Amino acid sequence: MSEIKRTLVPTPVSEAPLPETEKKPEGDGKVHIHYQKAKTYKRIFARLVDLLLMVLFGMLFYLGIRAIVMNTSSYKEASDRTNETMKDSGLYVESDGVYRDIVTYYKNQDLSASGRMKTYESSLDTFIQFIYSDGIEGAGDEVKANYDSYRLDATYNDQHFFVKNDQGEIIKNSSFKGDGIYSLYSSNVYEPYIDTQARGFLLSKIPQYYSDTKMMSNVVIFLEVPLAVLFAALLVLMVPPLCFKRNRQTIGMLVYHIGLINNDLLAVKTGKCLIWSFLRSVLVILLSFYTLGIPLIIDITMLVATKTKQDFTEYMLQVYEVDVTNSKIYYSHADIENDYLLVDQKGVDFKNIESK
Image (spheres, one colour):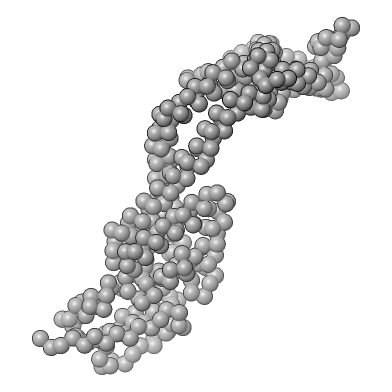
């Protein structure tokens, strides 16, 4: 067997690439391997495929994480206290194991206009008494004064819904006229007061209720959702590239025949692949979730507009996406020599060629 000559002359990707027609002459003693940069539209479509997969897996991860969190003792205790407060406040009704605010609930019930109005009145009376008994000091008087003021200020066609009698009591305006008076009282006084005032007072005047609802909201925003997004991103962006060791492809890259090469024009090593996947998952995907997609916009802009056509993580790590439809990415120089052993047994010359 003749000796294999290890003559490799890589052309750095940062240099201006050769036109596709410019090739080394035959018989120069080298094997020529040409990489074409993947077309931009294919790279964008590949990212869309990966994004759709992340949404799907993210929803599944969220449901699983949610189930685990809801079964922890601290969450159960906070949830039980919250439900008890909502029930006692008069502002919520239990339906199928879930507490719904009375406005949403009774709008969807087969209830007469007068029945709904009287229910709202009774519920608000219950709410004020609850604030007196369970609210912070002085909260009952504050809420009652606010409710009285709100009713007296409410008008429809220059008519007041409520007036004061000679004893200073607030009563319905007996001279009020309009079509569907009960519905007008509900939609112009009680429902907006419950939605814009009463439910807010429940949070601000019942400290334990505020603390519990804040804790449960924070768990969703800062634990359940981030973990679901991160796990989904890592599953889509890290696991497939670790399986497809030669091309380091995500599923989207696999669909569009895109591979990843290092700046030495060889396959990306496992360590750098892990960093590449992690940075894309955290800096681009997870951070975009909390910043209205700004990192993702920057990433795509760099991919489209920069001279090297590298996105943010590719630029940081100096890796490149190439078209592998008719090309092969090699692990090492020895891998190339072994591949061409039965052909020419000659050296290798790399060229990176821009797609047209």
